Length: 150
Image (cartoon, rainbow, N blue to C red; front, side):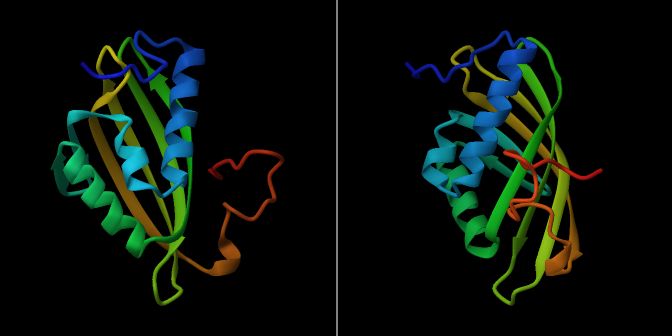
């Protein structure tokens, strides 16, 4: 039996925001094993054109991701929610091994099981090369919380 991962469905505005903040904090840890614990053992993902199934594949994917995407910083915002589903928009910044900076934007659709573990994640993501001085996240310029620029 899986351990509960509160908040659990059905979501309210307040619990959906808590779930989004927890996901943001987890991903910003850049710790694949920690992040994978938020997903069900049989979780299914679509991330861009890649399809994953289960925590093992999630850990392998995130390990590869954060080896390439250095100084990763992510911001997620709640877009919509229903009983067991949450939609977010997000942006993150990172640089590659050559020092080239990128900002990635996208949307995610999440579906949760009764224990609050994410069982389905669909992510659509677009990348934009940016100059280092064009960075928005991780610069400490926003009071207490980084936000997305529209």
